[in-house]
Image 1 (cartoon, rainbow, N blue to C red):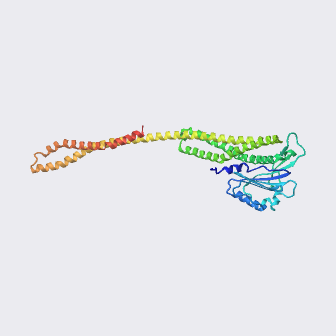
Image 2 (cartoon, rainbow, N blue to C red):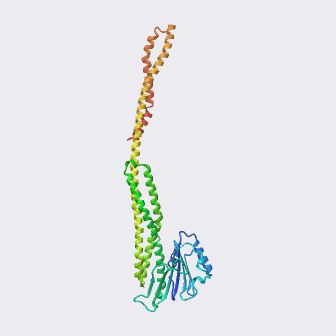
Amino acid sequence: MQLHPLRAYIFDELHSRPPLDLTRPTRLKTLVFFFEEDMGQQFRVLEAVCAGMGIEPPSASANYFRWLESGAGIEWSLHTEFVRYSFIEPLKSPVNAFSVAGMGLSAWPFSGELLVASEIDVVPQSECHGRFDITLQGDLHLSRATWVPEGVTRYVVSTAPGGWAEVGGVVQKVLELEIYLCLTLLALPIAKRQMRELDHFGLGLRDLTRCAGEPAKRDMGLLQQLEDLAALLEGHIAECQYRFSASRAYHRLVQGRIEELEGASVGAMRELKTLIERRLEPAMMTCDTVERRHEKLAARLQRTTALLRARVEVVHEEQNRALLAGMSHRAELQLRLQQTVEGLSVWVLSYYAVGLLAYLLKAGGHLGWIADPVITVAALVPAFVIFFYWRVAQARRSGGHLEGGAGTLLKESNP
């Protein structure tokens, strides 16, 4: 039986990130680092962290790792463009995840840019509030903390006695909700900046289109400006295309996590959903608007360039037609001149031939061989003229094939 090479990987992936099994009050401190490219440095950081904590790291091919002991530990998760570290500690214990390794947070060689830093406290509640076994509190504000002075977001997940079985999954979804929310909004600054740049781009394209309608300005220089503008637009599209596509994917994940938390009957989710959607939906609409403007400007630019190219080609054809007409006129003049020269050459050759023959006939006259040399020369003049005319005509006919081929080329080039 032949097995698919990815069969084991697929089933391992289904269980690669199980939710935490929380049965006591717990604090989860999470750091998420964004990176452009991972060449193995994220795993090397994990190895250093595990060495500092005195634990065995996973295999080099792992993208998920969890270590727990007495309610404290670390959870590591590697993704396409971010890595997550979650440090778990009992809420009332003086020993936290950072002191387990005997070293401070700043000494760990994290790689990437810090995107998310959060604290999630899981606490019991004495009784259920209405129909909710689990209640979520949080305002998505950055608050200063001793372990991250730049600020962390804080959440409190309170659970009734009947909600401990589900609280681990809820904590995981809350954490993923914040991560995917931040990753979704990474595209917003790019969209806002490009929105202003596209305004200037549109004005420049409008001016070039107006110039394209003026006959005096239709030249290759204007076409070059349009090509430069097209290259600039392609650069804008290349800059944001991946980020916008990723933001749409993360946006769908955010919506999915909100629906899952609502389905888990988590209290106060409606308020959190309203807070997120109030800002997230306009951000995604801004990104969509920028993409649509890219498409419309590209279409306008393509039409203007095609129109200008057509006009430039028409101008070139007219110039070529005028050039060929001039060449044809000059060839005709040259042919007429050649015919004139050929006619003169008949008389010139006849004149010199008769002159040379006259000397011979005069000599024959002195010797008594010819009775009257002058009459003989006069009688031979028509014969010489006819002979040289026939030779010139024969030479013209032998070169007629070349002249006919050249005339055909001129006709084909100038229909």
